[in-house]
Image 1 (spheres, rainbow, N blue to C red):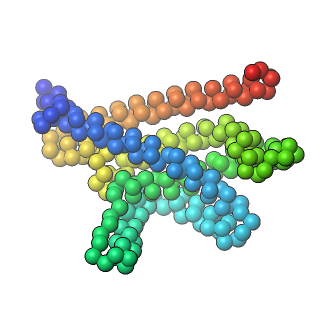
Image 2 (cartoon, rainbow, N blue to C red; image 1 turned 120 degrees about the horizontal axis):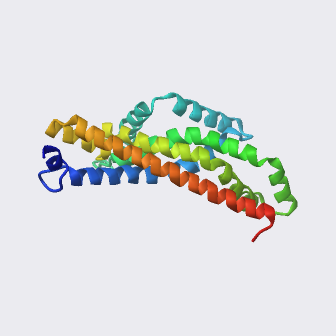
Image 3 (spheres, rainbow, N blue to C red; image 1 turned 90 degrees about the vertical axis):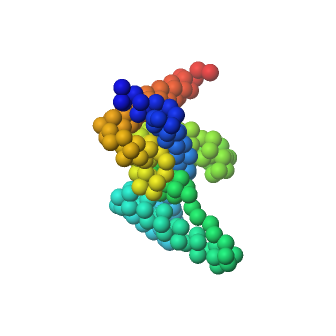
Length: 241
């Protein structure tokens, strides 16, 4: 059958390229998500900073990256960062050349967008924990650093998991946008296959099924993590070891 030949491995089919594209898609999402989470905390702290310039920067950051379409953010960062990096390298070492890969550009753009929304997740989670926990940690003589990482952060994760889980799903789907800068991810591979085989229904249908499976698995994993974390807090509240 023609469709089986199109999905076969080797020079006659696109099976191996699709598998590679899936790996790039997952790799991009996995590499971006921790970076986005860290940025989410930093941007939240910037927005509540006592220093006006820092606070204004945090608010401007979220306004810009929540307002721009993700694909426009990606294109601006990719092409503008290329120009800036080339200018810096040429200034420091004339005759040299350095470029930013589509993978790095995609990771930066997606992390900026996700962290703009993630800062709101952090804000809501910290509000759910409440100021009383900070005061209790201070009364125990813990430094602000130890208080945050030993007392506050474990409780923040409990409240932030649903929000960050939703952002992970959004990130997973948004990786398809990186195809516009020719990163060899799933959507870009499918587009190349369609241009060659003229079978759009087959390849677009296939990657649609793959994305549905990825999102379904991610949602189930999120629910399991939520149950495990909630179970741990219930045991602590009941005094169980």
